[in-house]
Image 1 (cartoon, helix red, strand yellow):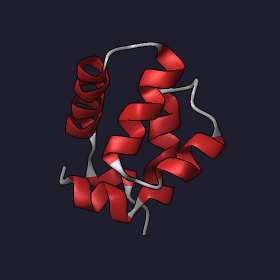
Image 2 (cartoon, one colour; image 1 turned 60 degrees about the vertical axis):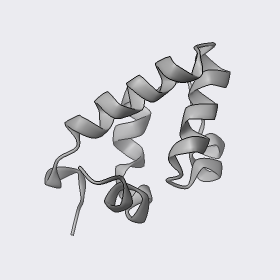
Image 3 (cartoon, helix red, strand yellow; image 1 turned 90 degrees about the vertical axis):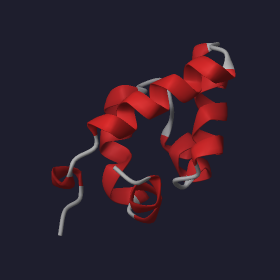
Image 4 (cartoon, one colour; image 1 turned 180 degrees about the vertical axis):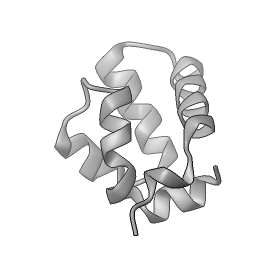
Length: 72
């Protein structure tokens, strides 16, 4: 899935992100607003992982993204 599409539809995919990263708060997701670098930073902060690990988690999550994540 193209990150631009995820970013553009952030409010619709936030639920899937919450399933993946339950430690992130609604405020965290509002701050992230679909920006990949911000998401990586929040994952690092909440989970205490290195930037590379956070990026790997995001890449794996992005690979799982399907059209069903986007409601019409």
